[in-house]
Image 1 (cartoon, rainbow, N blue to C red):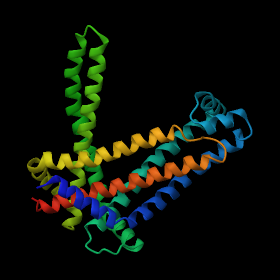
Image 2: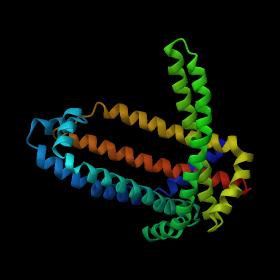
Image 3: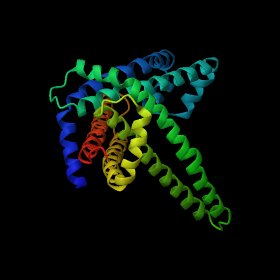
Image 4: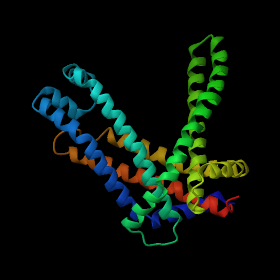
Length: 289
């Protein structure tokens, strides 16, 4: 199987299904506004006409952040609770939207409507929620057990080090290993979700077990395909950070920074479509074996 051909097929599918970009972008934008607006009004009320307010416009600064935390120290526990609730909602929303994305990618119907998209979101949410719980178990096994064992080996190496370079090299290698392990777990359960949609199955554990021999037989090709799309994400992120560092943070030109951030979000959503599209075609061409 030619990985490049699979990638290009997935690329074309992601573009043909690009109407979902609008749905996903609007949903993400509305959710972000809902989450950030209360905090924005609180900061605006207290600091909008002060020197601290100008510092906030420039970016994260420990001075104004310290002042804010000190003034609202009694609010801190509630703020932490709000952050936790916010993270849980993001987690559930991501599961919900993944159902719509994969459902519409697998669908042979070229015409995509918002109703069909939401229908797939609701249809596959219970199945994908169970997969998400299995994913957490997978992360625990990989990082709580496997990566912990690897870390112990690095500790033995660093313990006898004579220079700080050993520690630096060790830390970088461990970070790289952790990143690669993360991609493997993410890739594995992506294929589980796609299999559930393709087979229209509700048996998440069965799909997970069937996915093990499939990944073992096609591991390097599947992983190479996943890393190719991941490389695009990394390149886009680096370009965004570099350009963003030169954009204005105050005045009328602040709108340029905001538009650039939304453009980056748009591209990130497209790469998500590309991930699922390439994986779907790889699974299909492999015959779900």
